[in-house]
Amino acid sequence: MWGRVRRIGDKLVDRLRAEGRTGREERPHNLFEAAATYVAACAEDDQERIDEAAGWVSPEALAFGVNELACRAVVTLARERGASPRAVARELLGLPAV
Image (tube, rainbow, N blue to C red; front, side, top):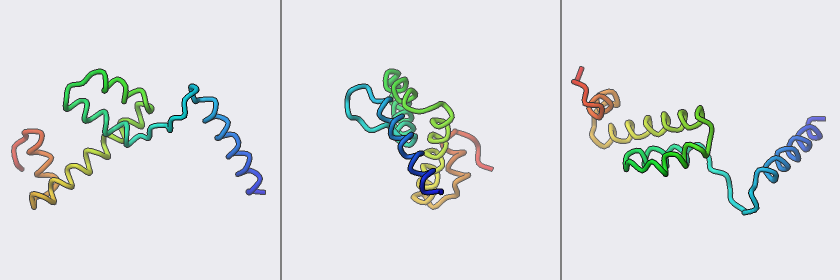
């Protein structure tokens, strides 16, 4: 029974994906690609790329991706600097050490 439900679901997803294409074969962007492009564009003050990346996924997904990117960046910098993630985050934001 579950196999049949799954096959029907797979067909539905395939059909929706096919309808969403605009005549060119291009894979959809995922939220991490959108977040990386969005954050890099913000750092470079490239409004065109900011707008483009923001349109790739829902605002909620973009917010999640940006949050995940920030967390990973802070953890990586903390490891490189031998400091705590809290200290690195505060330093990046220009806040006084606690």
